[in-house]
Amino acid sequence: MNDYLKDHPELFIPARKKLHFFGSDLELRRSRRITTQEYLSYFALARAEKRLGEASVWYLYSQRAAAEIKAFSPAARIIIMLRNPVDMMYSMHSQRLYSGKQDIRDFAEALEVEEERRQGLRPYQDNFDVKGASYRGHHRLEAARGA
Image (cartoon, rainbow, N blue to C red; front, top):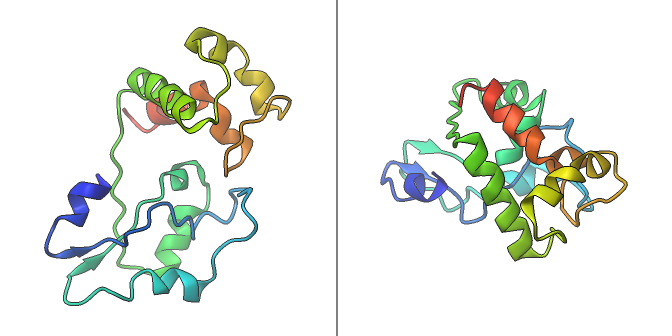
């Protein structure tokens, strides 16, 4: 969706995805959150576009992101694109294999150890908290959101 929105002449989307400025309840494993000034700098190239936006999928896991977005910009609109949960789980596994963040090639086996990963016993080398380690957790999240 990010790529589609970037092509729209009335929208400005920064080149960098996954800014994760909002969602203060998410535990990021990177060194620090970006500041407000750093966040706004990603929009410095915006000109006459009617809307500005960014793509940070982990906001879906946050209990605070929506309220923080509203406080930051009361006129903001949130757009979410959801996939078939089962397709998403297979896709996530493939992506993690490709990026070197998944060490188990067999999808069924990866599902078997996800509880250990959720507990931090076999963590991924991900940038985000262990909630993101769960294939089934993603599935439940998407199902709860009406996918």
